[in-house]
Image (cartoon, rainbow, N blue to C red; front, side):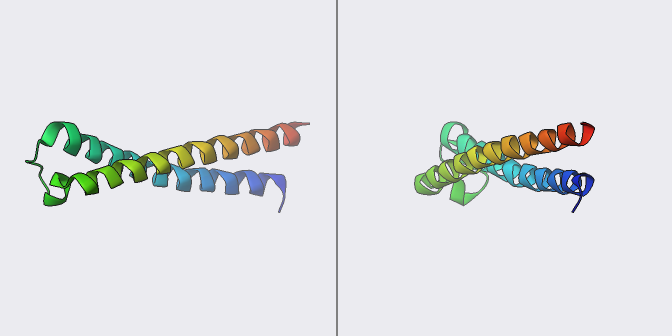
Length: 87
């Protein structure tokens, strides 16, 4: 695999990680809505359960942290490959 193909593969991996990271943001958003806005009258019955909401917040936060780390490392790798290619 040459450098340009590796850069393209990293770009696809960045897109995949960004989509997974978006799901984490959705979980956190729904969890915050259920915790602070809904007050037991959410649009879905699961959002009225405190345990489910806490799990959503925790899982979403872990996904966001993982996504941020992966995006950072992949972006650094892509940048180093681009710099290597330009030399």
